[in-house]
Figure (cartoon, chains in turn blue, orange, purple, brown):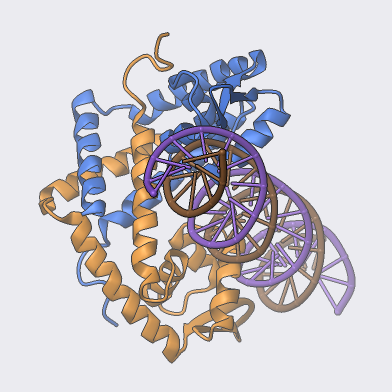
Length: 144
Length: 144
DNA sequence: GACATAAGATTAGATATCGAACTATTTGAT
DNA sequence: ATCAAATAGTTCGATATCTAATCTTATGTC
């Protein structure tokens, strides 16, 4: 029988597969410090953007508002953050970390930095920049 | 305030983000032909491997057996495939496509090829090979 | 040959994600 | 000033995925 694809497997395959392996391994590393990937991404988004509303946080993480709501509910229940309505625009919620949230952030950041070192191992900065650039081209091609 | 990370955002971020955008866009393209990403991956795995058992199919797709069972249930209910116990080893199920499954496979393959062309647009084969090579390095680093 | 162990598959229960429908609040047009 | 449209969040129901537990069948040891 002839192979189902004319030539090589599409590039998206490789990318998809690699990204999933990466996410799984990273999640495992975070689990050792008591976190998960979405919790880490949420903490990071909150730290990176001063007093953002949920819409901005979700957008910066790359998830939908409904999904962020779900994670914030869990994290709020765990005492990692608080939500307060913005007095100037009561439609918005301002999210801020509690001391427990700050503490978890620091632990997970440590794990993230360690993981990133492992991941980059052997690849020079120049190569990584090339990779980032090609990924940017792919993203642009998706939209075109 | 100082940024939460010392230097640039980790490479895994970019990869994760790009892969998710890719998967979403691809899934949309498949939906136009009446498919989904997991259905396409399953069909492709079945075509690529002659009479494989579920364990092999799941492994080639990169999902767990339990997840494959879930998809096969749905696809079997849709009349896309059949499962038969292997007479030589009755623990195994042999999965085969029905004519409807073959037909959907051809439609989705068309969509996949079109999508892949769009995705690669502008990138020469040499660049894609480099990308694939760097992804392989990252996968190797994950395991190390 | 009987029984423990292994292997393939399924089931059950959990988390992450999405889109669509809904609620609350603000803005803008007349 | 009223009321329609827009904006921020939440809720609901669906799909995809995982791990752990279970079921069925096969293998191997004694």
